Image 1 (cartoon, rainbow, N blue to C red):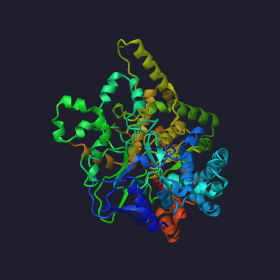
Image 2: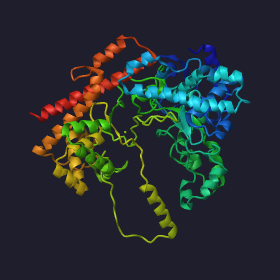
Image 3: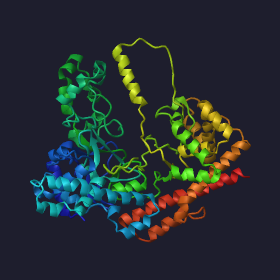
Image 4: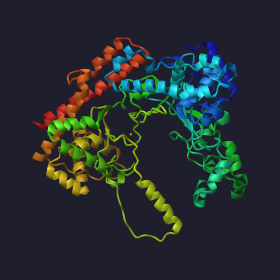
Length: 632
């Protein structure tokens, strides 16, 4: 546990390095989840409570061995971890020593540090697979990257330094610190430790947001420099004129206009860190200046006025004594546990993975026809993109009913099911099944350069983008299946004549899938969702009417029955391992977990297990109910 002496030393260091915060308004202190940031008085939404200069962030670009890491092309979490270990080894000679002394005093309790017998508690849970992969990755990274790097630079890393600060256990500990504390900064630093801001803990219901200028020079990290000017010269002149005077974009959500009551010397930062231009952020007196005066001042003042910092800004009013929190991302518990060392109860982003091979084997058992199953799976994989529209294609319609049944195609719902060994990152929220529209019209005359540019763009668009694993589908938090799994199962159990028509006529296939998703929405939500939409949009004009659903015919009932039976069979594959049935209750499981009085990673691992069991239970109950209703 951090002592008051270490915390005081860190705060003094933070002040020396121009980290700004109002000492009468917030404080860092021990809380339920370790050190956190708390309000000392009532604060208003829009207040900028913490401002960290990028000059003091610890990244692979700022560590004292940045040149060595660059020479060996060591980047990402490994580069940052080695850099942090080096700065810790330097002791008081490191510019970050007071900060590192504080955060290493009590490192996060990562699940990878649990003994093997305790990790076995999670063996049927997907989090277990991630944790075991993390342990293996760290071992391989240490032996294959860290050790050779140390041996190549013995003039920097002495034997004494290596034995004290660069053991495998020290690497694992620092990996946990870097994984749990690093924050995205910009396209120069990429990911870094941001002192003070990284003490703002996660909450499912946060009251603040993290903002930073993301668009900086990738070579030197400056907001504006000669490198960026050289790049600008290569861009189209019209684009340059449109962008002139615009403040850099933020890697965060837009805040409401208004001056924060704190950090008076920086009170214009919120306005400047929006998509508005610098001119729009000026006072009324400045707006009265003539065009010539604006031209005279031009970009010199802009660069001085925009502070290149990492900021924590309140989204909501905060009461005295309340913890200031932010949201780390829409991650399921298995990712929160692996990356940050904690999990949350009833996480709405939790999922259960369904492998394509599980679907194949289940369908073969039901249909007794391996050739048919393989043929239809291949058709689905080859054509599914035709039914999945791009983000923002809502006006074109589509066949997916939206709601909570995401495709996990990179639409913002980051489920974290892809485990990248090299960079320790976990891959990670409508009508999204519309056929992609191909419109033709009269061609306008274009210059050779324009035609060449369009050809290049077409070639880029034609390149396949594997932005999600094709062999993985999901059961969602409420026990429903995602759109891809529902589509695939309907393809598998579709009548032969219907399948042949779908192969020949994509419009007919779209209508077929549209009917499936409209019925699914009706089954799961009834008329509630329609009532809410009507209420919300009564002043916004009429919505297009949804197609009227006719009762299922005999063929439709046969297919629906087969799909439901297949879903239940898939659920039972996982549920049997957990001992879950439609009679068990998630509430009882959670009560038992709390009664066991587990702590740290062991308790959070228990939450991961509970979350998956809850999904499976919901799936058994929900789809069992649908099947019973169908058979009445």
